[in-house]
Length: 129
Image (cartoon, rainbow, N blue to C red):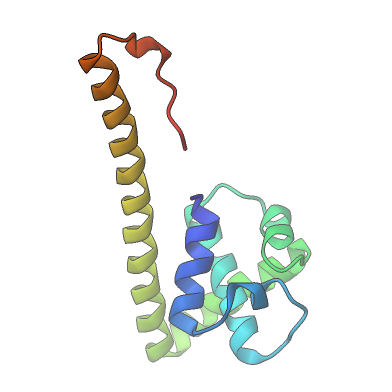
């Protein structure tokens, strides 16, 4: 699972919004805020450009992504409850990313152990991500 999918799932779970709704044209406050949070976390945790983020989250342009990130930053500084919620979501996202990495490591280790036990070449091992 890639980081963007993890970010979308964690934000949607926290904001009680369907991931499908992020990609729609709906402009309800709850959905727009969730979309903006996705932009904010994607900027912090991935190497995607603003154009790529906009295309992958809601089909928006780069200006919308920049506006969303600035809006979230302003809300963090002005609304203490929102800042606490963002911090909680951030911890959930980082934990989910760490869990995904450890599962990948486990799969690679298990394949390596299997190849070593049955005298197979470990050089042919290709990790499945």
